[in-house]
Image 1: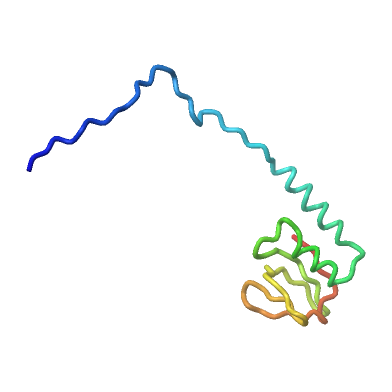
Image 2: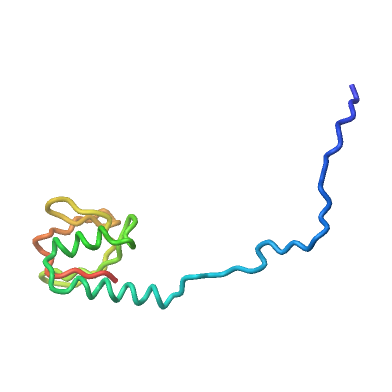
Length: 107
């Protein structure tokens, strides 16, 4: 029952291998900051529904968005995940009435 297994063929490596020695990072933090400033400035002068649509359709929104919400009586920072016809839904499963929102902007 003692069978000898066939040998494994391996090519000879006769050159220097430098895989993954040089890594290039094409994005910089400054570009991200400029983009976020541009998005927040693009939200000025629009109504709440337009602002919410732009936030939810932005390329930075995947499943949540960090926003600063100015309500009738206070200002809060929340992570919103969605909205229905009458409320914003936060990641903590809170409902914020759209009628109470005075202004909203991305952080």
